Image (cartoon, rainbow, N blue to C red; front, top):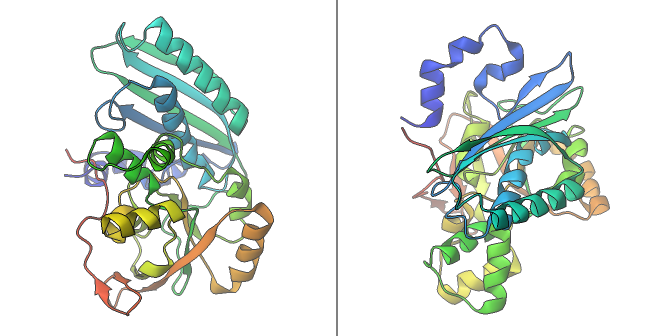
Length: 319
């Protein structure tokens, strides 16, 4: 079973009397009375990151991945706790100095503060990050409205190329090599947009597991479907160039996750304020589809109006 089936079968009932848990169907815990938002994420070597040869880059990736859960809810992160399990090799003096330096840089970049954590000796390297923010309200999942427009920030797919370069599954020239690997290790988070989202988004999620997988999660308990328009899904100039050179399929690259961009829906009447916000903040926000009734299945449509079969929806933890 995948992780959401596991949660529904064994743990959901344990949260029934706690509204703040959001039925264990969201990325965060939200205590409205205390205005507190909390997310927890675990990262394991070989699953969430390939290896620990670049500890300074890996630690940046996991911090950004964690606070992304807070940011996509329309909240600015404030504090984080960091727990790690590893051995003398992974937590060598050299590695710990690099980790500390990277944490300081991330704290300065995102105005967050380390508040505590834990360390455990183990043969298996892993990290758990707890991120905390404060807000009077958040944007929850499963709150899309019929005929909402679907939007995404930034570009998709660059991180997956970086992962494939690191896995030696794809080979490209030096300048693009560095660009894509940096996008994998250091995704660009839309911190400036976080509070603005509250003024127009009906529902939101960050893209960690892939565009299609995360859109399905966004709507998973609603009787709705969607139309996505492939030509409208944003990719970088570098990825567009690579897809042409290598004759690669766009859909395969924008569906794999690790982008940490914000996927949200909004009423069509909000399009003007969304475009104005994007311009004023200097960020890219693209309209990529429409929320529909569940009278037909969700579909992806190419520029010729042809429906596209999705071979892979993204990443799922299976048990």
